[in-house]
Amino acid sequence: MPNTESYPIHPIAHIHTDFAEKFGIPRQAGLVDALTARIVFTPEYRVAEAVRGIEQYSHLWLIWQFSREVGRPWHPTVRPPRLGGNTRVGVFATRSPCRPNALGLSSVRLTGVDTDAPDGPALIVAGADLLDGTPIFDIKPYLPYVDSHPDAAGGFSAATAGRRLAVDFPPKLLARVPQDKRAALTGVLAQDPRPGYQHDPGRVYAMSFAGLTVKFTVDDTSPDLRLTVVDIV
Figure 1 (cartoon, rainbow, N blue to C red):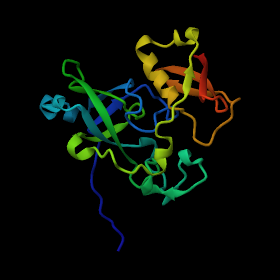
Figure 2: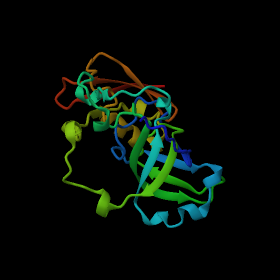
Figure 3: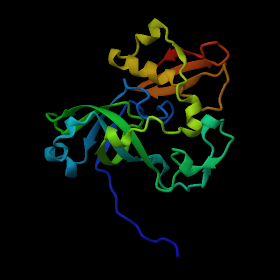
């Protein structure tokens, strides 16, 4: 018989990040630690007692939703960009957003708890890979003695895990970026925001970040895989 059970679930918080669009968001949490984000609880859960003791942990798990995927049909196989967009693998062998329940899981670093702000207590985190406004369903502490598996197999994602681009950021363009956002933006660009199947050295890509439009090119033929920022709007 088909499973007709349903379970109510609703957001406890929303996260505020520098990403207004999907393009440019790091492919996994923790890849760009300079990225900062603010988690604001919904009024029902905006209670200081609910986060008592959370500052004792360095990292947290976020359970959230790919909100732009809600209502879209899911498929048993997907084509990961890291495999060139042509190879199909099972959806449960990936972290694709095209899932039956469109749920995401991210480990982020807790940098502080803002208890004095009007929307507090809010959590300040680093390394988040979430779109601005993403709903969060739960927050749990990261426990290194059970959650860390250094010898775990990384599947097809391991082949590009350490890949980074050299970033050529002209000083006059870098000056247009707020100083507290420069390290984060450079780190995001170094992760290569392009889809894995795009390798056109003449193409100018445009990425939204912290209210700016960042335009860049990537030369895959250079020895150091170089990304060059060509404009900041």
